[in-house]
Image 1 (cartoon, rainbow, N blue to C red):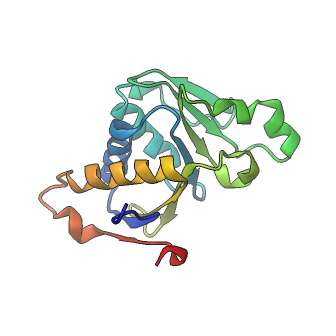
Image 2: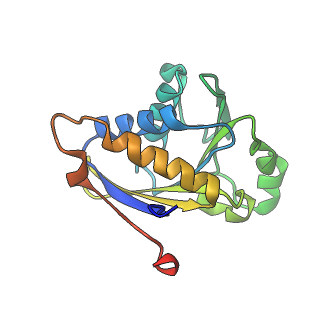
Length: 183
């Protein structure tokens, strides 16, 4: 595809935009999509998942961080498995919760702290990195790893550009780039 790109980054200017961005992702997810969420404490990973659940038509009031339970499942247009690897320290802990079994073609998976156990992620996943800029703003970097996640990234890109955020032009707040190996 001539317009294909693997990286996409932009700024979310408020918690409302984080929620709206998550909602946008939820609207375009397909079965088997995997979101690998990365970011320090308080970066907005769980807030983003709340938006994803609303975009899937699920019950937003029940969305909480699964830090202590390790996993939650939400029902909407598609089932979403929400995992949090923060408390896991060793590979055998990740194996014991059946992490690799959560990635099927029947569900969508959103994994917080995905960078703790990268070898357990499927080869094809979309990394969503949230970076603090200020108390309320976040830099978001999306990195597609494979054909399915590249398709997801394109769907997110199109849907996000079509989203109206208080009259601001979506094009003025985003940029994308190809991986150096594809230039």
